[in-house]
Image (cartoon, rainbow, N blue to C red; front, side, top):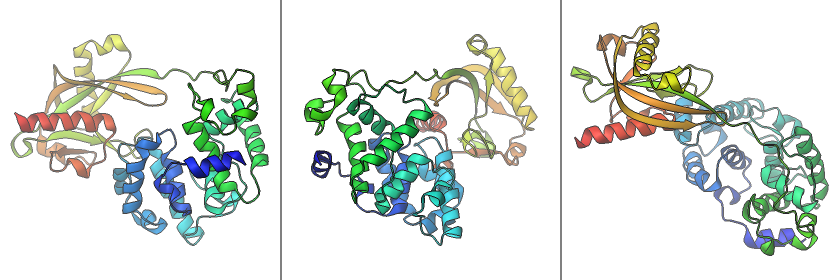
Length: 360
């Protein structure tokens, strides 16, 4: 088969391809969800160096796992991975299940991830259909089904499974993914380099750039937030006040500057609105802040469905010793900074703040 010959010759040297360890393959597939390969490589290497086995990941404190995930985003992936790994250790004797029902029952393991682990690690003829594979199949067979629909994914899983050559599931599935990532790319497919271009119906009909068909996702909703940069004094000089997010929900358990959402961009432009709301929100936590209207920073953080626009106001806290006793608040300086887990936007803001403070 031309596709397999091409893959064996052209495949990228990726760290998770150097073994068939199902745990390593599992970690890589979770990291690669909504994240580019080049971004994932250093995170993968660092993660498996610290947690080289299921047992070590299962036994690790969640904060340490999140710290090694910091910067990749979508932190529920890390939490779900650790939860699932603990189940494998307890229920399956630390052996990643090789049965479709068992592996699909693990938290955070959907049809694609299950198929990838079963086919790559265990060479089982299970489809692993991601966006790259759906694009390749849509063009190769000139399919007009909307790939945003779940029914299309299901039908393509059936089609992909029929195509798997006997005994070649691992290489075939990876070859399809590699073809989509390197040749059959979304906007500019290099058909001249494709090993199956002669048989591609989309290419024959001149529709390779038109396919696949996909309804547009909704635009991310802009959200406007004020944050308080609270500088410490006395024993807390050189430190800033941060708080920990709740145990559940978006960015759970991560640390951040105190911040609040305002209704819209008009309110965002009014400093007095941010000042008053920040003070009110902190008071509900038992923390008294004095927020000024001095803007000391601005930042943006993009989620899949939201865009946070953040304006940072200078502030001070009264009763600093009392504030430090609040379980969800802490005074953090540059020495303690790396021991906390931060969303990227607050990591960037605070890194810039500490660098500026040190250089003053």
